[in-house]
Amino acid sequence: MESVEITAGSVKEALEKGLEQLGIAEEDCVYEVIRESGLIKKKYTVKVTEKPKGEKKALEFIRGVIKRMDLDCTVELKSTDDGFLYEISGNDVAHIIGYRGDVLDSLQYLALLVANTVEGFDGRIIVDGENYREKRVQILSKLARRLAFKAAKSGEEIKLEPMNPFERRVIHSALSDDKFVSTHSEGEEPYRYVVIVPDKHPRRERRGRDERQRKERPQEPRVSESNIKYHTDIDMYDAETSRNFKKKGFGKTKSYGVSKRRF
Image (cartoon, rainbow, N blue to C red; front, side, top):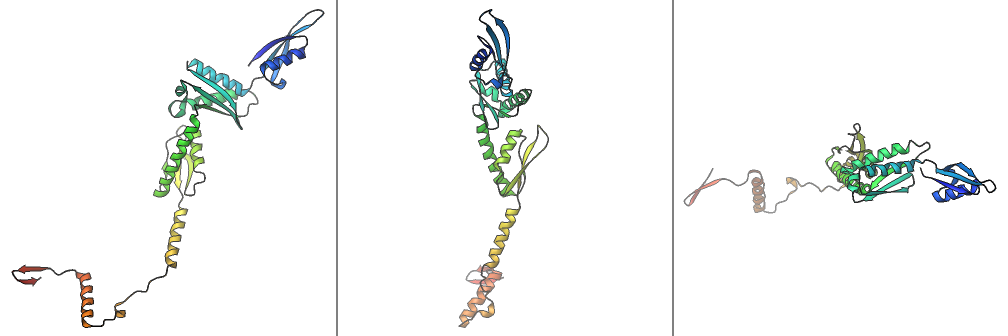
């Protein structure tokens, strides 16, 4: 919490100067008169202190962690629609991100706990490093679509590796509008994972549509032997030979000189 001491001819004047110096509104501060001096011309020394805010307390905590880790990084606090974003940048940001963002997730969780110690804090906290979150979302979204296609094609469930809540939400969101698969989570933390389940209904619909198309397709009339007309004995012989060939194939022969014997 930042505070300043301002001396002025009146308490109001000192308070206004203190608010201007801190860059906050009056409702965001507490103040007290710590000294009064002067006999004829009064002077008042006022201490103006910014009220504790959850997001500012979380910012101090993150900066303290980075300092204790002796990392070359800076933190910038930004307001979002539903909370606050802490962007970390610098030469050592990879150490803050960790393997698949595990250090970043731990820091985010602890920062949220610190922010919640301030009464009245109600907001979402996101800790990011060098735009890692957005890059991870793109990677997981591509993975989700690829595995969804595989599950729909094979008709078998696919279980992903254990993920943190943020990554599981990305998978669910990426496949929320998919017509051929559905998703749900199984297991207990920290080993909770996403299951991609193929939807059988689209296959049945396609199969039923194919069967209806086959039924509606006009059938060609069958040709029986009685319908075949032969004009000559040669035609009859050729047709009979052709039928016998299809059933029995070529006869086996063995040659002895110029004569042949059939077995």
